[in-house]
Image (cartoon, rainbow, N blue to C red; front, side):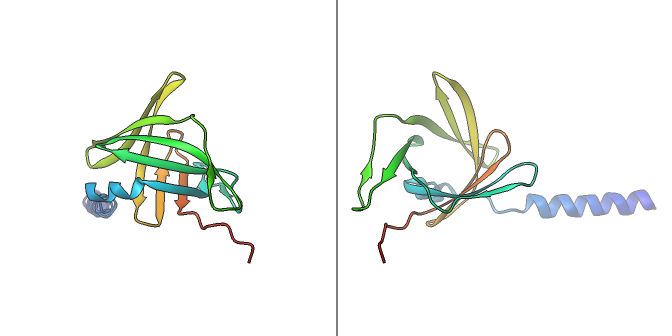
Length: 141
């Protein structure tokens, strides 16, 4: 009887965990644009918050092929850029969207956990979760 109760409890727990909404392909369009790191949650539970960022990520995706590069915001609202960028492909792996990178330095994947027009959550290869927001224009006010 105890085994039956434990099995039923496990079944319900798995059902709740697996019911998390998947990300529709149309939401991948939100990847495009500028993203500012807000915080990182490490696998051991530690958190690192970013109050000020010297660089911002620029992401552009077309037909599931994308680039990601660092840009540097300036006081006048423009960005300093360079030619350094990482190329990636967006792939669907059993209902999970992955960003797959391949550079001359290595290969890795990042999992998109959540995305909308103003926030992005990505799980890195080492299990850290990165929280991004859209950057606000610089203001002296």
